[in-house]
Image (cartoon, rainbow, N blue to C red):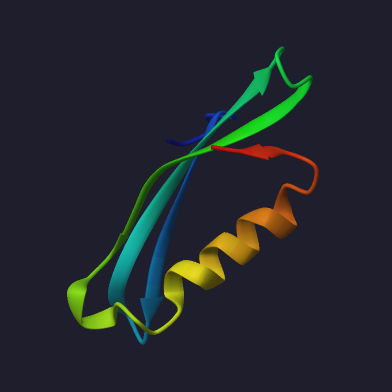
Amino acid sequence: MNDNPYLEGYIFEDSNEVQGYAMIAKSFSTEFGKSCIWIEDLYIKDEYQGFGIGSLFMDFIVEKYVGSIFV
């Protein structure tokens, strides 16, 4: 992903234990006239599901990209 301005990757971890990952893609929608955030992948390992990791990630993305359309 390096310096790609259209793709972001996230790894969820605690105490060096990987709990999951997510990837988003960014684009502009002429239909909506604003930026779009595509949540391409959101994976949480079975043993970490139900702890709110996915919800925390969604809250983070919504706050980071205020005013964007989420797909």
